[in-house]
Length: 208
Image 1 (tube, rainbow, N blue to C red):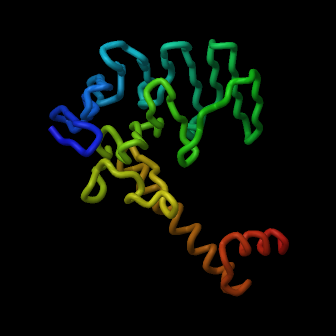
Image 2: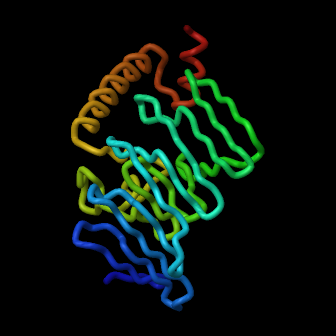
């Protein structure tokens, strides 16, 4: 068992957080996972508040919460293509960069652009879930990068972002993409003279 000033934590033998208990005993969160370490259900003080169904690649297809059931459809890039919520009817459609929104409910995307699941207080990062209250993911990094497999972006979200890769091939392709992009950016900097990124982009697009 691990703890901080506010909570005590219990993990299973796969490194998944299975129980988070407030030190004053006021709140007990319990997390259950499927055989692939995907979050399957969450209980708060003994009452189930959310359950999840995933596709074969690990993307969340359905969430059943306390007040609503949410369905998601993803494109090949793991972006939400269609989302429907049955509470007061909420619909999002993302096609070729265009956004169509129906309904008056607010989409809870607040931390690095990720979706906040308000029923459980966690952010959904596709491969795993992030607890902003304790500043950690509730499960290990799938590719086990670095010394701490639970932190987000080396604890510096203002500079880095966590892609949360599900395997090494995804990471390798992203690294090659980054190197190519950086190389091209360096060549453009030489032509424009080094300037701050925002000013650089503005000046670059003026030249196109």
